[in-house]
Length: 237
Length: 306
Image (tube, helix red, strand yellow):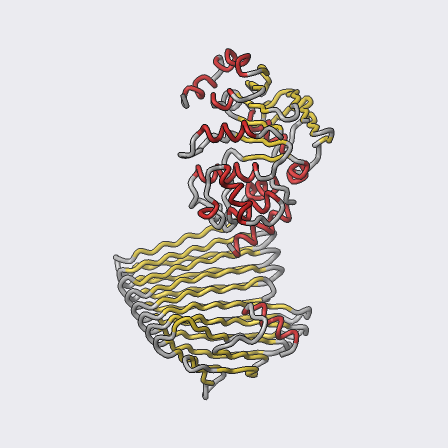
Protein backbone atom coordinates (compact mmCIF):
# COMPACT_ATOMS: atom_id res chain seq x y z
CA UNK A 1 0.00 0.00 0.00
CA UNK A 2 3.00 2.28 0.53
CA UNK A 3 6.17 2.14 -1.47
CA UNK A 4 9.33 4.19 -0.98
CA UNK A 5 11.57 4.18 -4.05
CA UNK A 6 15.17 5.36 -3.85
CA UNK A 7 14.35 8.01 -1.24
CA UNK A 8 17.30 10.12 -0.19
CA UNK A 9 17.42 13.25 1.94
CA UNK A 10 20.50 15.44 1.94
CA UNK A 11 20.96 18.68 3.85
CA UNK A 12 23.66 21.29 3.71
CA UNK A 13 25.58 21.69 6.94
CA UNK A 14 28.52 24.08 7.26
CA UNK A 15 28.85 24.26 3.50
CA UNK A 16 28.99 20.48 3.14
CA UNK A 17 26.32 18.01 2.10
CA UNK A 18 25.16 15.69 4.84
CA UNK A 19 23.13 12.61 3.93
CA UNK A 20 20.31 11.99 6.41
CA UNK A 21 18.61 9.25 4.37
CA UNK A 22 20.51 7.26 1.77
CA UNK A 23 18.58 5.54 -1.01
CA UNK A 24 15.74 4.05 1.04
CA UNK A 25 13.58 1.41 -0.65
CA UNK A 26 10.70 0.02 1.35
CA UNK A 27 7.41 -1.75 0.70
CA UNK A 28 4.70 -1.52 3.33
CA UNK A 29 1.88 -4.06 3.06
CA UNK A 30 -1.74 -3.43 3.85
CA UNK A 31 -2.88 -3.85 7.47
CA UNK A 32 0.52 -4.66 8.90
CA UNK A 33 2.25 -3.07 11.85
CA UNK A 34 5.76 -1.78 11.17
CA UNK A 35 8.20 -0.40 13.70
CA UNK A 36 11.06 1.76 12.49
CA UNK A 37 13.90 1.67 14.97
CA UNK A 38 17.52 2.64 15.14
CA UNK A 39 19.98 4.77 17.06
CA UNK A 40 19.43 8.46 17.63
CA UNK A 41 20.18 10.39 14.46
CA UNK A 42 19.63 7.39 12.20
CA UNK A 43 16.95 9.21 10.19
CA UNK A 44 13.79 7.56 11.63
CA UNK A 45 11.80 10.75 12.20
CA UNK A 46 12.96 12.28 8.92
CA UNK A 47 11.75 9.20 7.07
CA UNK A 48 8.20 9.44 8.44
CA UNK A 49 8.14 13.22 7.97
CA UNK A 50 8.92 12.61 4.31
CA UNK A 51 5.95 10.22 4.03
CA UNK A 52 3.46 12.79 5.44
CA UNK A 53 5.10 15.62 3.48
CA UNK A 54 6.62 17.73 6.26
CA UNK A 55 10.02 17.18 4.64
CA UNK A 56 10.65 16.85 0.91
CA UNK A 57 13.07 14.16 -0.22
CA UNK A 58 16.08 15.27 -2.24
CA UNK A 59 15.50 12.37 -4.60
CA UNK A 60 13.13 9.42 -4.85
CA UNK A 61 9.44 8.83 -4.93
CA UNK A 62 6.70 7.65 -2.60
CA UNK A 63 3.64 5.83 -3.90
CA UNK A 64 0.57 5.41 -1.70
CA UNK A 65 -2.12 3.03 -2.93
CA UNK A 66 -0.97 3.56 -6.50
CA UNK A 67 -0.81 7.36 -6.22
CA UNK A 68 2.52 9.18 -6.33
CA UNK A 69 2.81 11.56 -3.39
CA UNK A 70 5.35 13.65 -5.26
CA UNK A 71 4.34 17.32 -5.08
CA UNK A 72 1.33 16.70 -2.84
CA UNK A 73 0.87 19.00 0.17
CA UNK A 74 0.58 17.65 3.72
CA UNK A 75 -3.20 18.12 3.75
CA UNK A 76 -3.59 16.36 0.40
CA UNK A 77 -1.72 13.38 1.77
CA UNK A 78 -3.84 13.52 4.95
CA UNK A 79 -7.00 13.51 2.85
CA UNK A 80 -5.76 10.49 0.91
CA UNK A 81 -5.76 8.60 4.21
CA UNK A 82 -2.43 9.19 5.92
CA UNK A 83 -2.42 10.29 9.56
CA UNK A 84 0.57 11.37 11.58
CA UNK A 85 1.09 11.70 15.33
CA UNK A 86 3.81 14.17 16.23
CA UNK A 87 6.63 13.19 18.53
CA UNK A 88 6.26 16.55 20.28
CA UNK A 89 2.54 17.43 20.34
CA UNK A 90 1.79 20.94 19.11
CA UNK A 91 0.21 23.41 21.53
CA UNK A 92 -2.32 26.06 20.51
CA UNK A 93 -3.51 29.23 22.18
CA UNK A 94 -7.29 29.04 22.22
CA UNK A 95 -8.05 25.86 20.27
CA UNK A 96 -9.79 23.31 22.45
CA UNK A 97 -9.60 19.52 22.46
CA UNK A 98 -13.10 19.47 20.92
CA UNK A 99 -12.00 21.80 18.06
CA UNK A 100 -9.06 19.59 17.16
CA UNK A 101 -11.08 16.36 17.27
CA UNK A 102 -13.77 17.98 15.09
CA UNK A 103 -11.05 19.09 12.69
CA UNK A 104 -9.46 15.63 12.68
CA UNK A 105 -12.74 13.89 11.87
CA UNK A 106 -13.89 16.62 9.47
CA UNK A 107 -17.26 16.96 11.22
CA UNK A 108 -18.89 18.41 14.28
CA UNK A 109 -18.89 15.58 16.80
CA UNK A 110 -21.52 15.03 19.45
CA UNK A 111 -20.45 14.51 23.04
CA UNK A 112 -20.85 10.72 22.83
CA UNK A 113 -18.41 10.53 19.91
CA UNK A 114 -15.89 12.81 21.63
CA UNK A 115 -16.25 10.66 24.73
CA UNK A 116 -15.47 7.56 22.67
CA UNK A 117 -12.38 9.08 21.02
CA UNK A 118 -10.95 10.24 24.32
CA UNK A 119 -11.81 7.15 26.35
CA UNK A 120 -9.68 5.10 23.93
CA UNK A 121 -6.65 7.01 25.23
CA UNK A 122 -7.84 6.88 28.82
CA UNK A 123 -9.18 10.43 29.12
CA UNK A 124 -12.61 11.45 30.37
CA UNK A 125 -14.31 13.70 27.81
CA UNK A 126 -16.14 15.66 30.47
CA UNK A 127 -12.81 16.85 31.87
CA UNK A 128 -11.11 17.54 28.56
CA UNK A 129 -13.29 18.51 25.58
CA UNK A 130 -13.44 22.19 26.48
CA UNK A 131 -9.84 22.53 27.62
CA UNK A 132 -7.46 24.47 25.40
CA UNK A 133 -4.66 22.38 23.94
CA UNK A 134 -2.00 24.57 25.52
CA UNK A 135 0.79 24.37 28.06
CA UNK A 136 -1.67 24.02 30.93
CA UNK A 137 -1.99 20.36 29.90
CA UNK A 138 0.78 18.00 30.97
CA UNK A 139 3.12 16.42 28.45
CA UNK A 140 1.37 13.09 28.97
CA UNK A 141 -2.09 14.56 28.44
CA UNK A 142 -0.95 16.30 25.25
CA UNK A 143 0.54 13.08 23.98
CA UNK A 144 -2.67 11.16 24.56
CA UNK A 145 -4.77 13.85 22.85
CA UNK A 146 -2.31 13.69 19.94
CA UNK A 147 -2.90 9.96 19.76
CA UNK A 148 -6.70 10.42 19.91
CA UNK A 149 -6.52 12.90 17.02
CA UNK A 150 -4.92 10.26 14.82
CA UNK A 151 -7.07 7.33 15.93
CA UNK A 152 -10.39 9.16 15.42
CA UNK A 153 -9.55 9.72 11.73
CA UNK A 154 -9.63 5.95 11.05
CA UNK A 155 -7.08 6.41 8.28
CA UNK A 156 -5.70 3.72 6.00
CA UNK A 157 -2.18 4.54 7.16
CA UNK A 158 -1.23 5.78 10.62
CA UNK A 159 2.24 7.00 11.47
CA UNK A 160 3.27 7.45 15.10
CA UNK A 161 6.57 9.13 15.89
CA UNK A 162 7.74 7.85 19.27
CA UNK A 163 4.24 7.55 20.75
CA UNK A 164 5.57 6.30 24.07
CA UNK A 165 7.68 9.41 24.74
CA UNK A 166 6.22 11.40 27.61
CA UNK A 167 3.30 9.03 28.24
CA UNK A 168 2.44 9.67 31.86
CA UNK A 169 0.82 7.45 34.47
CA UNK A 170 -1.37 5.87 31.84
CA UNK A 171 0.13 2.43 31.48
CA UNK A 172 2.37 1.50 28.66
CA UNK A 173 0.33 -1.68 28.22
CA UNK A 174 -2.66 0.41 27.14
CA UNK A 175 -0.59 1.94 24.38
CA UNK A 176 0.48 -1.44 23.03
CA UNK A 177 -3.13 -2.68 23.30
CA UNK A 178 -4.23 0.21 21.07
CA UNK A 179 -1.62 -0.61 18.45
CA UNK A 180 -2.57 -4.29 18.52
CA UNK A 181 -6.21 -3.36 17.98
CA UNK A 182 -5.52 -1.36 14.81
CA UNK A 183 -6.04 -4.31 12.49
CA UNK A 184 -7.94 -2.39 9.80
CA UNK A 185 -5.09 -0.07 8.93
CA UNK A 186 -1.40 -0.05 8.17
CA UNK A 187 0.60 1.36 11.04
CA UNK A 188 4.14 2.66 11.13
CA UNK A 189 5.57 3.39 14.56
CA UNK A 190 8.92 5.01 15.20
CA UNK A 191 10.11 3.53 18.46
CA UNK A 192 12.90 1.85 20.30
CA UNK A 193 10.69 0.44 23.01
CA UNK A 194 10.97 -3.32 23.47
CA UNK A 195 7.22 -3.76 24.09
CA UNK A 196 6.40 -1.97 20.86
CA UNK A 197 9.10 -3.81 18.91
CA UNK A 198 7.61 -7.07 20.15
CA UNK A 199 4.19 -6.44 18.61
CA UNK A 200 5.56 -5.45 15.18
CA UNK A 201 4.88 -7.59 12.13
CA UNK A 202 8.08 -6.19 10.75
CA UNK A 203 10.89 -4.14 12.20
CA UNK A 204 12.93 -1.81 10.02
CA UNK A 205 16.32 -1.02 11.47
CA UNK A 206 17.87 2.22 10.27
CA UNK A 207 21.50 3.10 10.84
CA UNK A 208 23.26 6.17 9.50
CA UNK A 209 20.37 6.87 7.13
CA UNK A 210 20.44 3.41 5.59
CA UNK A 211 18.33 0.32 6.06
CA UNK A 212 20.44 -2.06 8.08
CA UNK A 213 17.96 -4.92 8.20
CA UNK A 214 14.24 -5.70 7.96
CA UNK A 215 12.55 -8.64 9.70
CA UNK A 216 10.39 -9.97 12.52
CA UNK A 217 11.16 -9.22 16.16
CA UNK A 218 13.01 -12.49 16.71
CA UNK A 219 14.88 -12.21 13.44
CA UNK A 220 15.89 -8.67 14.34
CA UNK A 221 16.78 -9.18 17.98
CA UNK A 222 20.52 -9.78 17.41
CA UNK A 223 20.78 -6.76 15.14
CA UNK A 224 18.88 -4.52 17.51
CA UNK A 225 21.11 -5.61 20.37
CA UNK A 226 24.12 -4.64 18.35
CA UNK A 227 23.00 -1.05 18.01
CA UNK A 228 22.57 1.84 20.31
CA UNK A 229 18.98 0.61 20.69
CA UNK A 230 20.21 -1.81 23.31
CA UNK A 231 21.00 1.03 25.62
CA UNK A 232 17.77 2.86 24.85
CA UNK A 233 15.80 -0.34 25.23
CA UNK A 234 17.44 -1.01 28.57
CA UNK A 235 16.36 2.38 29.87
CA UNK A 236 12.78 1.17 30.01
CA UNK A 237 13.23 -2.38 31.22
CA UNK B 1 -35.35 50.50 13.24
CA UNK B 2 -34.51 49.71 9.63
CA UNK B 3 -32.80 46.53 8.41
CA UNK B 4 -29.28 47.99 8.54
CA UNK B 5 -29.81 49.13 12.11
CA UNK B 6 -31.24 45.77 13.11
CA UNK B 7 -28.29 43.92 11.55
CA UNK B 8 -25.81 46.19 13.30
CA UNK B 9 -27.61 45.77 16.60
CA UNK B 10 -27.39 42.03 16.24
CA UNK B 11 -23.67 42.21 15.52
CA UNK B 12 -22.72 44.42 18.44
CA UNK B 13 -25.10 43.11 21.07
CA UNK B 14 -26.04 39.67 19.74
CA UNK B 15 -29.61 40.88 19.98
CA UNK B 16 -32.22 39.86 17.44
CA UNK B 17 -34.76 42.29 18.80
CA UNK B 18 -34.98 45.04 21.37
CA UNK B 19 -34.42 43.31 24.73
CA UNK B 20 -36.59 43.45 27.78
CA UNK B 21 -35.39 45.38 30.82
CA UNK B 22 -33.44 48.63 30.91
CA UNK B 23 -32.52 49.73 27.40
CA UNK B 24 -31.15 52.81 25.71
CA UNK B 25 -30.63 52.55 21.96
CA UNK B 26 -29.04 55.48 20.23
CA UNK B 27 -28.98 55.76 16.45
CA UNK B 28 -27.29 58.61 14.59
CA UNK B 29 -27.27 60.73 17.73
CA UNK B 30 -30.98 60.26 18.44
CA UNK B 31 -32.61 58.04 21.06
CA UNK B 32 -34.55 55.23 19.37
CA UNK B 33 -35.69 53.61 22.57
CA UNK B 34 -35.24 54.29 26.27
CA UNK B 35 -36.76 52.11 28.93
CA UNK B 36 -36.13 52.22 32.67
CA UNK B 37 -37.27 49.58 35.13
CA UNK B 38 -38.16 49.73 38.80
CA UNK B 39 -34.59 48.67 39.61
CA UNK B 40 -32.57 50.39 36.88
CA UNK B 41 -33.22 53.99 35.98
CA UNK B 42 -31.88 55.65 32.82
CA UNK B 43 -31.83 59.44 32.95
CA UNK B 44 -30.69 61.71 30.09
CA UNK B 45 -27.96 64.22 30.92
CA UNK B 46 -28.93 67.89 30.93
CA UNK B 47 -25.56 69.44 30.17
CA UNK B 48 -24.28 67.15 27.42
CA UNK B 49 -25.14 64.21 25.25
CA UNK B 50 -25.51 60.96 27.15
CA UNK B 51 -27.22 59.20 30.01
CA UNK B 52 -26.87 58.41 33.70
CA UNK B 53 -27.74 54.85 34.60
CA UNK B 54 -28.66 54.21 38.24
CA UNK B 55 -28.80 50.64 39.51
CA UNK B 56 -30.52 50.42 42.90
CA UNK B 57 -28.97 48.49 45.83
CA UNK B 58 -29.18 44.68 45.90
CA UNK B 59 -30.23 44.30 42.24
CA UNK B 60 -29.10 40.87 41.11
CA UNK B 61 -29.27 39.14 37.72
CA UNK B 62 -30.49 42.16 35.72
CA UNK B 63 -29.06 43.70 32.58
CA UNK B 64 -28.75 47.05 30.83
CA UNK B 65 -28.36 47.33 27.05
CA UNK B 66 -27.04 50.61 25.63
CA UNK B 67 -25.98 50.05 22.00
CA UNK B 68 -25.05 52.91 19.69
CA UNK B 69 -25.67 52.74 15.94
CA UNK B 70 -24.38 55.03 13.22
CA UNK B 71 -25.66 54.40 9.72
CA UNK B 72 -24.81 57.68 8.00
CA UNK B 73 -21.54 59.07 6.68
CA UNK B 74 -19.91 62.27 7.85
CA UNK B 75 -21.32 61.90 11.37
CA UNK B 76 -19.31 62.75 14.48
CA UNK B 77 -20.95 61.39 17.61
CA UNK B 78 -19.82 62.04 21.18
CA UNK B 79 -21.67 60.50 24.10
CA UNK B 80 -21.08 60.47 27.86
CA UNK B 81 -22.62 57.56 29.75
CA UNK B 82 -22.24 57.25 33.52
CA UNK B 83 -23.17 54.16 35.49
CA UNK B 84 -23.85 54.28 39.22
CA UNK B 85 -24.07 50.77 40.64
CA UNK B 86 -25.25 50.75 44.23
CA UNK B 87 -24.08 48.25 46.87
CA UNK B 88 -24.50 44.47 46.65
CA UNK B 89 -25.58 44.34 43.01
CA UNK B 90 -24.74 41.79 40.33
CA UNK B 91 -25.59 43.21 36.90
CA UNK B 92 -24.62 42.88 33.25
CA UNK B 93 -24.13 45.89 31.00
CA UNK B 94 -23.99 45.41 27.24
CA UNK B 95 -22.68 48.35 25.24
CA UNK B 96 -20.95 48.70 21.92
CA UNK B 97 -21.08 50.69 18.75
CA UNK B 98 -21.70 49.73 15.18
CA UNK B 99 -20.92 52.03 12.27
CA UNK B 100 -22.36 51.27 8.85
CA UNK B 101 -20.86 53.80 6.49
CA UNK B 102 -21.83 53.60 2.82
CA UNK B 103 -20.42 57.02 1.98
CA UNK B 104 -16.99 58.50 1.32
CA UNK B 105 -17.19 60.68 4.43
CA UNK B 106 -15.77 59.74 7.82
CA UNK B 107 -18.07 58.70 10.64
CA UNK B 108 -16.81 58.79 14.20
CA UNK B 109 -18.10 57.66 17.57
CA UNK B 110 -16.50 58.73 20.82
CA UNK B 111 -18.10 56.91 23.74
CA UNK B 112 -17.00 57.96 27.19
CA UNK B 113 -18.22 55.50 29.79
CA UNK B 114 -17.71 55.94 33.50
CA UNK B 115 -18.49 53.18 36.02
CA UNK B 116 -18.92 53.84 39.73
CA UNK B 117 -19.22 50.42 41.34
CA UNK B 118 -20.16 50.50 45.01
CA UNK B 119 -19.09 48.12 47.75
CA UNK B 120 -19.49 44.39 47.13
CA UNK B 121 -21.14 44.81 43.75
CA UNK B 122 -20.31 42.87 40.62
CA UNK B 123 -20.53 44.18 37.06
CA UNK B 124 -20.06 42.33 33.82
CA UNK B 125 -19.48 44.77 30.97
CA UNK B 126 -19.46 43.69 27.33
CA UNK B 127 -18.41 46.10 24.64
CA UNK B 128 -18.29 45.25 20.95
CA UNK B 129 -17.17 47.51 18.12
CA UNK B 130 -18.11 46.91 14.52
CA UNK B 131 -17.37 48.86 11.35
CA UNK B 132 -18.92 48.01 8.00
CA UNK B 133 -20.34 49.48 4.83
CA UNK B 134 -19.14 49.60 1.25
CA UNK B 135 -18.26 53.32 1.31
CA UNK B 136 -14.67 54.55 1.34
CA UNK B 137 -15.38 56.79 4.35
CA UNK B 138 -13.48 55.88 7.51
CA UNK B 139 -15.20 54.27 10.47
CA UNK B 140 -13.55 55.62 13.60
CA UNK B 141 -14.25 54.51 17.15
CA UNK B 142 -12.57 56.01 20.20
CA UNK B 143 -13.96 54.51 23.40
CA UNK B 144 -12.87 55.78 26.79
CA UNK B 145 -13.75 53.72 29.85
CA UNK B 146 -13.25 54.92 33.42
CA UNK B 147 -13.76 52.40 36.19
CA UNK B 148 -13.95 53.18 39.92
CA UNK B 149 -14.20 50.08 42.05
CA UNK B 150 -15.08 50.50 45.72
CA UNK B 151 -14.04 48.00 48.41
CA UNK B 152 -14.95 44.42 47.63
CA UNK B 153 -16.44 45.22 44.24
CA UNK B 154 -15.65 43.37 41.02
CA UNK B 155 -15.83 44.14 37.34
CA UNK B 156 -15.34 41.92 34.33
CA UNK B 157 -14.86 43.85 31.10
CA UNK B 158 -14.81 42.19 27.69
CA UNK B 159 -14.04 44.34 24.71
CA UNK B 160 -14.00 43.08 21.15
CA UNK B 161 -13.26 44.71 17.82
CA UNK B 162 -13.08 42.45 14.79
CA UNK B 163 -12.14 44.03 11.43
CA UNK B 164 -14.01 46.87 9.80
CA UNK B 165 -12.93 49.72 12.07
CA UNK B 166 -10.54 52.07 10.24
CA UNK B 167 -9.04 53.55 13.35
CA UNK B 168 -9.59 53.22 17.07
CA UNK B 169 -8.02 54.65 20.18
CA UNK B 170 -9.22 52.75 23.22
CA UNK B 171 -8.35 54.18 26.60
CA UNK B 172 -9.25 52.51 29.86
CA UNK B 173 -8.55 53.97 33.31
CA UNK B 174 -9.28 52.09 36.51
CA UNK B 175 -8.89 52.74 40.19
CA UNK B 176 -9.36 49.93 42.71
CA UNK B 177 -9.90 50.05 46.48
CA UNK B 178 -9.45 47.27 49.08
CA UNK B 179 -10.27 43.76 47.82
CA UNK B 180 -11.60 45.10 44.53
CA UNK B 181 -11.05 42.93 41.49
CA UNK B 182 -10.91 43.90 37.82
CA UNK B 183 -10.60 41.54 34.90
CA UNK B 184 -10.24 42.89 31.37
CA UNK B 185 -10.23 40.88 28.19
CA UNK B 186 -9.50 42.57 24.87
CA UNK B 187 -9.84 40.90 21.48
CA UNK B 188 -8.76 42.75 18.40
CA UNK B 189 -8.43 42.01 14.69
CA UNK B 190 -7.20 44.63 12.26
CA UNK B 191 -6.82 44.34 8.50
CA UNK B 192 -5.88 46.47 5.47
CA UNK B 193 -4.43 49.81 6.64
CA UNK B 194 -6.42 49.96 9.90
CA UNK B 195 -4.87 51.22 13.10
CA UNK B 196 -5.84 50.35 16.66
CA UNK B 197 -4.33 51.83 19.77
CA UNK B 198 -5.07 50.55 23.24
CA UNK B 199 -4.03 51.97 26.56
CA UNK B 200 -4.78 50.55 29.99
CA UNK B 201 -3.97 52.60 33.08
CA UNK B 202 -4.77 50.86 36.34
CA UNK B 203 -4.18 52.18 39.83
CA UNK B 204 -4.22 49.48 42.49
CA UNK B 205 -4.87 51.62 45.56
CA UNK B 206 -6.41 49.15 47.99
CA UNK B 207 -5.06 46.25 49.96
CA UNK B 208 -5.57 42.93 48.14
CA UNK B 209 -6.88 44.67 45.07
CA UNK B 210 -6.15 42.86 41.82
CA UNK B 211 -6.27 43.35 38.09
CA UNK B 212 -5.94 40.92 35.22
CA UNK B 213 -5.58 42.31 31.70
CA UNK B 214 -5.57 39.83 28.84
CA UNK B 215 -5.18 41.17 25.33
CA UNK B 216 -5.24 38.94 22.26
CA UNK B 217 -4.83 40.60 18.95
CA UNK B 218 -4.30 39.71 15.32
CA UNK B 219 -2.93 42.21 12.80
CA UNK B 220 -3.20 41.40 9.09
CA UNK B 221 -2.14 43.08 5.83
CA UNK B 222 -0.62 46.51 6.53
CA UNK B 223 -2.52 47.20 9.74
CA UNK B 224 -0.87 48.57 12.83
CA UNK B 225 -1.63 48.10 16.50
CA UNK B 226 -0.21 49.63 19.60
CA UNK B 227 -0.73 48.22 23.07
CA UNK B 228 0.24 50.18 26.16
CA UNK B 229 -0.39 49.23 29.73
CA UNK B 230 0.55 50.96 32.93
CA UNK B 231 -0.21 49.15 36.17
CA UNK B 232 0.65 50.97 39.38
CA UNK B 233 0.60 49.08 42.67
CA UNK B 234 0.23 51.34 45.69
CA UNK B 235 -0.57 48.68 48.25
CA UNK B 236 -0.29 44.96 48.79
CA UNK B 237 -1.94 44.01 45.52
CA UNK B 238 -1.68 41.83 42.43
CA UNK B 239 -1.54 42.82 38.77
CA UNK B 240 -1.10 40.65 35.71
CA UNK B 241 -0.99 41.89 32.11
CA UNK B 242 -0.80 39.47 29.22
CA UNK B 243 -0.48 40.75 25.67
CA UNK B 244 -0.45 38.14 22.90
CA UNK B 245 -0.28 39.22 19.29
CA UNK B 246 -0.21 37.45 15.95
CA UNK B 247 1.16 39.40 13.01
CA UNK B 248 0.56 38.41 9.41
CA UNK B 249 1.70 39.86 6.11
CA UNK B 250 3.27 43.32 6.62
CA UNK B 251 1.33 44.15 9.77
CA UNK B 252 2.93 45.40 12.96
CA UNK B 253 2.11 45.27 16.67
CA UNK B 254 3.95 47.33 19.26
CA UNK B 255 3.58 46.43 22.93
CA UNK B 256 4.78 48.75 25.66
CA UNK B 257 4.41 47.43 29.17
CA UNK B 258 4.88 49.43 32.30
CA UNK B 259 4.50 48.08 35.78
CA UNK B 260 5.26 50.18 38.81
CA UNK B 261 5.33 48.67 42.29
CA UNK B 262 5.14 51.87 44.34
CA UNK B 263 4.47 49.73 47.39
CA UNK B 264 7.02 46.95 47.64
CA UNK B 265 4.28 44.50 48.64
CA UNK B 266 2.76 44.85 45.20
CA UNK B 267 3.16 41.85 42.92
CA UNK B 268 2.98 42.87 39.25
CA UNK B 269 3.58 40.74 36.18
CA UNK B 270 3.68 41.60 32.51
CA UNK B 271 3.88 39.03 29.73
CA UNK B 272 3.99 39.88 26.06
CA UNK B 273 4.46 37.76 22.97
CA UNK B 274 4.19 38.92 19.38
CA UNK B 275 4.95 36.85 16.35
CA UNK B 276 3.76 34.95 13.33
CA UNK B 277 1.66 31.83 13.60
CA UNK B 278 4.03 29.04 14.58
CA UNK B 279 4.83 26.87 11.58
CA UNK B 280 4.23 23.70 13.56
CA UNK B 281 0.65 24.81 14.37
CA UNK B 282 -0.07 25.13 10.64
CA UNK B 283 1.63 21.81 9.94
CA UNK B 284 -0.38 20.04 12.63
CA UNK B 285 -3.71 21.23 11.25
CA UNK B 286 -2.59 20.37 7.72
CA UNK B 287 -1.96 16.79 8.87
CA UNK B 288 -5.62 16.80 9.90
CA UNK B 289 -6.62 17.70 6.33
CA UNK B 290 -6.86 21.51 6.33
CA UNK B 291 -5.23 23.65 3.66
CA UNK B 292 -2.67 26.17 4.89
CA UNK B 293 -5.24 28.96 4.57
CA UNK B 294 -7.94 27.01 6.43
CA UNK B 295 -5.40 26.17 9.13
CA UNK B 296 -4.47 29.85 9.47
CA UNK B 297 -8.14 30.84 9.79
CA UNK B 298 -8.80 28.17 12.41
CA UNK B 299 -5.78 29.22 14.47
CA UNK B 300 -6.82 32.90 14.38
CA UNK B 301 -10.42 32.04 15.22
CA UNK B 302 -9.32 29.94 18.18
CA UNK B 303 -6.79 32.53 19.31
CA UNK B 304 -9.35 35.34 19.36
CA UNK B 305 -12.44 33.47 20.46
CA UNK B 306 -11.01 30.68 22.57
